[in-house]
Length: 377
Picture 1: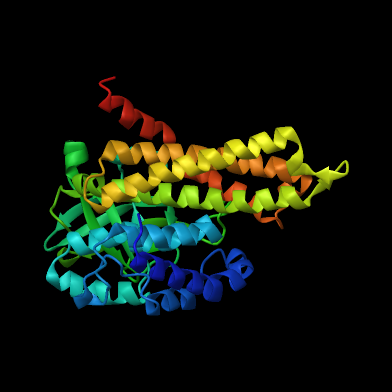
Picture 2 (picture 1 turned 90 degrees about the vertical axis):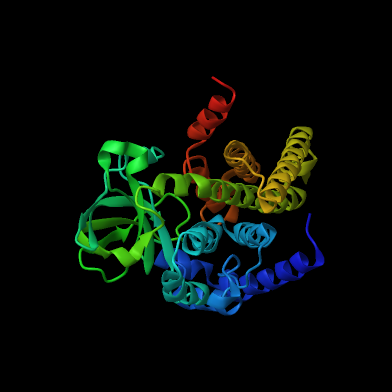
């Protein structure tokens, strides 16, 4: 599955996390965002440009397994970190590498790789959810520019992003075929942000609403072809969903390992609570389920590395890993008893953090709809 090069990279990622993230978690929770200096440190460590050619400051890894290593290690310490950094280096990167002109790549990618420019992707709208074809944000051509109006919500990195890939309707009559992508940059007149949203979990990642009021976007910020936005998003959503799967199972596995140790140490009625048959059997089931799911995710990672992962298989990985993650963490809370409900315990925070994984990147219900259609239903 992984080579010596991947193992060396994993060691470097763990050192970065130990040095830059773990000591400052409470600070990031209070600020509802990862500090800018940590983004810059990630850039110096070569973590942000895995899929970016060397000519623009990236490492040009050309192997999705490096992405998988970084996502899993970030998720193990906190799924919010896999979310914030992953949106940047794993989700937005393909748009800025594959859909851009040479001029755009020169303009954006060097700062993308250093962490000077944080990025986000603006798909989701209030009332729209997973139905991307029903976007209400519009872009109207005006000379060489486009005038953007509308809003986006639940946008990870939305508050701090210097560039947002925004999906907008350029020909509403064509529905999905009338969607175009634009790069909206910080400072464009009419582009504003709401407050950082108060989420149930993942406070370390900033999430915000974005507003576009007659934002004049130059033609030089068009991404790809006019009307090609929906296809571009559909082609790249499998990577976002397999990234979610990687994070989901890594997050669950880390907390489960801690919970097993907790049940060894915690005593009740004169013995460790893990030795009670019910708890022992439950942990045996959870460990088996996590390990089997990890094998499934690994196979999907290998398939995606070869360019063979289908949208349907990505949907399967996304919904199943999110389901297992939430089942495992709910059981871990139960095994911790009253302490499992205290925010000061990692298991409680992990439980809250995980709930959204059955909703974002396409809800689990939408994933099942995709799978069901493939079955001819």
